[in-house]
Amino acid sequence: MSNKTTQADASRIQGGQAKGGGDMTSGGFASRAQSAGDTNANNAAASGGGGGGQNAGRNDGGNGGSGQGKK
Image 1 (tube, rainbow, N blue to C red):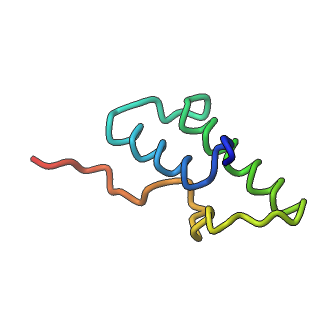
Image 2 (cartoon, rainbow, N blue to C red):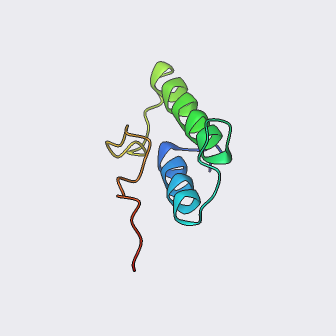
């Protein structure tokens, strides 16, 4: 089992940070998680290791939410 951050992990982190009002700046944890996930995916692709479906077709870096909460 690998302990490396995947792009799917990064997506979950970003969603949680956004919903919880966390730091969404370029220096925040969600941004660093996305960078790690992208780096690990690129390294796996370069070494021929594949991604095991971890990418799931998401390259937008976000959860697609409108940012509008319930009123």
